[in-house]
Structure formats: C-alpha cells, structure tokens
Image 1 (cartoon, rainbow, N blue to C red):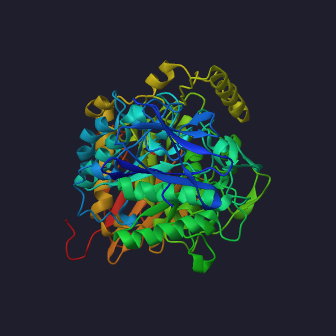
Image 2 (cartoon, rainbow, N blue to C red):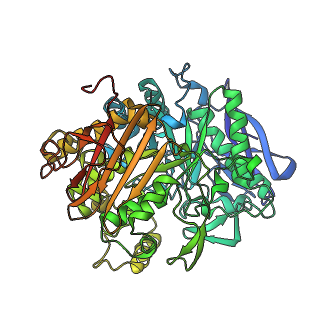
Length: 614
C-alpha cells in the first residue's frame, strides 16, 4: 500500500496512514480556511480517504485522537523541519529527461561517495550538478549520496533522519534531488542513495505514537531498533519496502546502499532483507531495468549476497570492510579496536584473492570466531575502498588517510583499490589528496540531545588512545572545517594526485585484464619477512602484474612472472608523480631481481609477442 499523501490531480489527494494506536485520525489542513477532515478506519489499523480542495504545496498534519498534530510518517516533504507540517507534492510534475536510461551494470561501477552538505560551499543538490561531467570524465560511473531523509536542523551526516520518505529541505528538497538524479543519468552516471533501515533519528520521530514501529527486544548503538519480527511487524516491513520502491519509482534512483544491516534485527523465517530483495527484483522486471541493493555489514556473512536458492538473502553486493582494514593497518600505525585483527600482508593478500579475511577465523577484537568464506562469491559483489565517511569521520579528528599516512601511502592505497578485482569506491576529495577533515557534525535544536551526542562521541573514542577532546559536533565550525576545497585539485601536489587517480582509472577502463571485477583470473602473493605484495591479473592474453611495497623501507624481490617482455605502465615512485625517483626498469624479462622503493606501487603489462613496442 502506498502510504502518505498521494496527489491525484484536480485538487484531490488520497491520504493513507497506518495508525493502529489511534482511536481517530483526521487530516488537519492549517491553511486559510483551516480544515479538519476525518479519515476512515480500514483493515490492519490503516486510515484512509480522498480529500478534495487541496493541491501541491498544501500543508497538513495528522491529528491523532482529536488532540495531537503530528507530521505524516510517510511525509514526502517537511519544509518547516521535523516538527512542522508535511507538504503535498505532485510526484508526476517533474520533467524527467531520462526516459531512455537503462542503468549501468554493477560490474562497471566505479563509485564516488559524497556528502551533499560539504561537497560544495553551497551544500545543495544543485551545486553538485556542475561537477558531474568532471567526475565522469575522470572515470567515475556511479555517485553515492549519503542519506538525504529529513533530519533535524541543517547540518548532519544524514543518519539521524526522522522521515525516511522526505528529502532534506536544506539540500533542495524533492525537486532538487530529482534534478540531481536526472543530471546524473544525462551524464551517464548511476545514482546510489544511502538509506537507513536500522533506526530513526531521535528528534522529530513521532512514529511510535502511530504504531509499533519500534521494539525493545533489541537495541542498536544509535537507539531503538526497528520492529521487523514482532507483533505488527508485517506493516513495518511494508513501510520500509515501500520506502525503497519509492526511491526507485519516484526519484529514479538506481541503487540503494543499506546502512549497517547488522543492526537490522530480524529472526523470522523470511528475513526482511530477503523480502526487500525479492520486491526489488519484481519492481526491476516491471520497470525494465535493474535496481540494486548494496549492504553495509560488519558480519562478513555471505548469506547477504547469496541467492535465495543458495540459502541467502539475494542482495546484489556488500561493502568489504576487511579489505579496508587490512590495507589501512599496513599503511598506518593504527592497531586499536577492530584494527587489532589486521596488520599482515597475508591478510591483504587473502582479501585480494578471496574477499573476507575472517571466514570463521578467531578474531582477537571480538574474542571469538567470526565471518564466513566468500571464496566462491563473484568479485562484483564486493565494494572496496581505502577510505569512506565512516573510516574518516569516526576518527576523533576526522583525519583522512593522506594526513595520517602521507602522500606516498595515499597513492599506494589508491592503486590497491583501483587495481583490485572488486568494485572501487572513492570518498569525495581523495582523488586530489584533500586534507580537510571529515568530522562528525549535527545541528539538533534540542540542547539536551546535542549534549548527549557530545558525551556519546567521547565514549566512542575510549577504545582508542587518541588524545584530546573531539570537536564539538554541534558547533557550526566543525561542519565548515569539513567542507572540501575542490579548487586545490588544479594546483601543486593536489594536481599530481588528481592526475594519478585519472591514470589509474584510465588503465582500469582500457586494459582487458583490469576492466571487470574478476577473482578467478587472479593470483596474489607476498614475500616472507617483507612488506611486499604482488597481484597478477589476466583476461585472455592480456596480463598485468602490480607490485606494492606497503612499508617504509625499500625491498628487493624477484619479479613474480615467467619469461616474457614486461613493460612498465605506472610507477608511483617516479618524479612525474612527485615520488623520490624510480628504482624499477622500464622493461623486464622473466624473474629478474628488482627493488621497490618504500610506500610505492608499480604496474607492468606483458607485451604481445608480435608487438613489443606498443
């Protein structure tokens, strides 16, 4: 059932709300003249009726039991914030230009994650649009937007959304978001939206007054858990499934990134995620193009991405945190909290070859065995990165990898991600070595809640030995410090990094051995007692070998290839990339001894026998 206010045209609108906890529900139209229109009680606690004399732009509340005015739980627009009235919008009014858009296959994704509020000085959907051509030309094929569901105030990461269907007012609202999606499709880019189905934000959240949306049987780190398997859960599941379909149907979104699915607690025989995947598949068939679901999870559980026939939930892909952690610990001194589970080149080698590092292996951090083997899952089902909003923003000072580990390490990390057999994700600004932090920020009008967030942040960092106080999330300056300085990409070292990313993305696109995610045509290995790792990939006769020195000392090794003529295509140590100077020859034959400078990477390609000069 399509919940909320559905404008039917000709001044009429159907209002539908699930409110089994109410004895009466009225639509309160506070305009001039003010009106109260009772809704009719239906089955399963739904209230519904068609109201005339309204139009797009009309604002309304649901009045419960003749006493309390509350915004619509399925509001599409909250122009006055989370406590104000909802607004009727006409979903059919936007002039879409993407009628011939067929989407981009998952295996062709190169994802660019961005936060709308800090990507530009304006902090709006409209301000993102002029940057799309440059991102596409660089090699990006999909933009991933951090959550846009209406949150309190104007500054937030987006994970405190209180209205899952409503688009954040300060970003540009529903029409602004549609314009961004339309512009992405015009540019040949897919749009991935980050959605949160494990909790709702604490301020402006009135859902519990309507129905049993929440449960006290479980608890998330961020508040009440959603009721996916208790009494009344059928309609809760329907609400969130309708939300997913609304993003696909009304906003033409191509894929959803499902936040922290390990905090979606559902022990029913048919898991919510499985039902969501089935309904998404059905909708994709109806729409004639694929719509994708990408999970974030810390469980290392292949059931998320296995098909229903294999006993899984049928999601299309998931974030591969083990890859990030294995890479990060080799390039930094971080060994606390979950990082204590990583730190060897063998871990990263396994992440390249198989996927999950933890496959029912003992985890010192968890003090138990953890994970499942992903060896048999295709590479296109894993999204990898060297940094993302969580891994940066959940540091006390929000430092990016380039700040923590330096310029050379950041280049090496970029190569590890973009030469990997997986779907790469870049976090906004890393492509030119942005050094502005990405800090945690909020703008809660409720002072008690703001103080609770400050205390919570301090508590979070007790697992780490970082010194000092975290920046105040409520302070507008914390938000301003997190804004990108994109103009830097044209100058100095930032320009060098920008060109390095462009070259990596060009090689990934042009070389058959690198073009598609593929774990089958791959070998990886390490050199005992060193920080060196090598990666060999091939497609048909096209073969490449990537060499990585992830430590601070130069290392000698035998080139890990059989005889043949190998040409160097990229070397991060070259002066071209502001390196210290290469120690590697331009051409190699067989297993010659070579020397890798510290914190460097290089890529060689086997030359065809008929054309040794290509």
